[in-house]
Length: 556
Image (cartoon, rainbow, N blue to C red; front, side, top):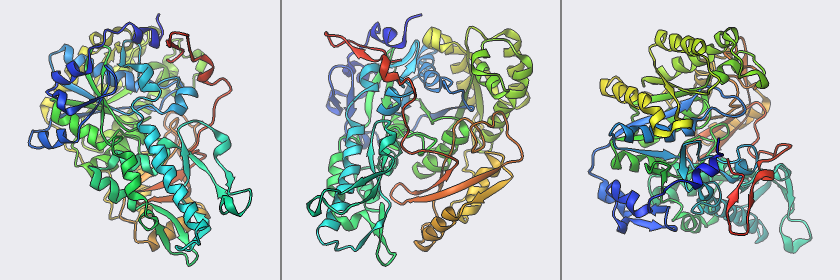
């Protein structure tokens, strides 16, 4: 079998002008970045304002194995399959983050014969959006330190600076650093730290902002620090939000690319769902809804993270009404959730599958709570047996969810036509009645408890002293009327990655909270979640290379 990058290199890409033309976008509304990728103009939104919206499809997943379950692959393949059955569909995907590309993932543009291309560009610098976010974030950090250096007119307490620097690379050594050393001319010495760019509040702001005016207003609301009297200091008071917005002006424009089968795809934004809100941009999704009859988007990791945040944060703010949810699962992930070690997942094991399938059941039940019908897509591997597939189909039928075997990785769009037909049939029934899980007016602890009990199936929530202190500060600011964004492991419904399947008789421990005032949510930290990941023992970077002609290898 060819590697992902070898398949991608064989792709017969169309010029991006031709892809745009196919969805009714003229050359005047394109800002090309080479021949095969482009940004879409601000004017396009105005031109499409009166056009009716298509149907929105969310792709999410069960709790995965460490290797992931092919959610992006299914998203890409579903769009290709929609085209195969004569439907006009567009993808709305997240941009990959450089850190995981060189760390564990080795790439994030789909896989096999369901990829977005040019995959090398997409996985590396793409159109520079991540760099713009990094620069805007770190400009604000520089302004904070400069304000203190220049007499500290805002009386910023250097011990209570909340806003961190960022870098789009996995580098654990930067989690906690000392800055300002080397004498008076080099600034005020203090403790600081880095997040990965996609965990930053600026990333969330870019993804949730409706336009440039909204972007600037959100940037101004960032809570950066407290002063010596314990009062909040917001980004607006530092005076650089206009400059930050200028850095982000082009990054606000969604990026148009294509799949291996020339289906249009809009990629924009890229937060992780385990440490951020996990969805692509509101602007990209809304644009897809105007340009096609079906817009297919994904949310990061399992539905306990990405889908919950998609429904409770993104849809709430953007006024989106999803028509269908595709829940991706694999037989191997279900066996993994049933206790089978990673090296035994290819062997038939109905007993373990029976145990692990409770994870699938829980995710289906959870998704139904948002009022959106579910289609289960099994990302099929050649090692899956007929008996295993029959067992999963039986469970789906019992829970009122459609079931489809998708062979998209190996066959591209042709391998997902059954899935596409079932998704369309579910949408045509018109049974979707989207509603968020909770009312934002509820007290913070009640909102957290609702997520913990109804989505994670916890008995309750425990708060550390630090979390209680952080909550009191958020309450004092009058910022409690906001959605909750939980930072949690993706490997379990609980906050313990080792508790697989459907954990029981556990409590969620909240160790800290943070107000993301600009983004418009409260971040709740559970378990040992790092906002700056590290590299594994054998990083994917070891396999990536480029030859003398500029051909890249090793991305997967």
